[in-house]
Length: 242
Image 1 (tube, one colour):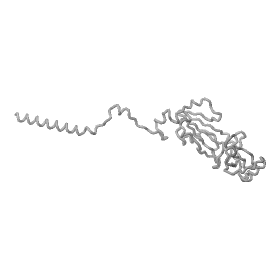
Image 2 (cartoon, one colour; image 1 turned 180 degrees about the horizontal axis):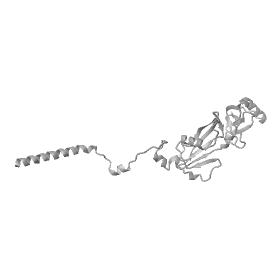
Image 3 (cartoon, helix red, strand yellow; image 1 turned 120 degrees about the vertical axis):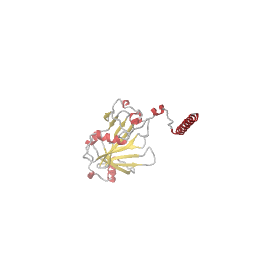
Image 4 (cartoon, one colour; image 1 turned 180 degrees about the vertical axis):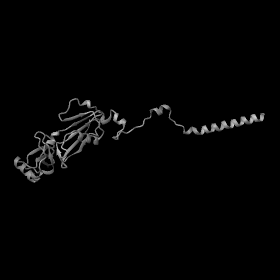
């Protein structure tokens, strides 16, 4: 009887020892996080437009400015909305959805400037309007994106101005000669480029030539803008003013 009891006790000790050994081997794979760590962890979920929920709700989005800083509307303000945008492509879509332009005409828009790399400024995007793939000077629309809204600035009157008929324009040399005679200006101007030019006050959109006089002296260098049909002086810009 004693031998049976001793045997049973030895068997129980053996089983317990084996159990302790198994538990010891499992310790290294237990999580090192306590309950607090697990509760603090969050999973970032992206929204349909590719931005995260954290980014969308952050007060630092779009350089951190609130639309309330623009209490007085600019004379060129077209729209003020509480819609929040993220990036150039959303700004472009928002612009096209909210301005009145003839979609059956060959107008197109291209982002030409931005304050993306200047976090101290409002976040804005400038879009230049093109007609038949030719840029229109003075046509810029600006989308200013805040952390709680968006503003569009520009002049929709541009689309009521009919771009000049290119069949009636003269050559750059002919136009420069007309200007030189009318203004008694014999400086050696060099042709630079051509494009449309929006005259906001008169509502016209002539085709223009741009010329450059560069003599190496800042106070004497000039940039000319001339009507490509009449030679009318539309722009006379010195590099610097004395």
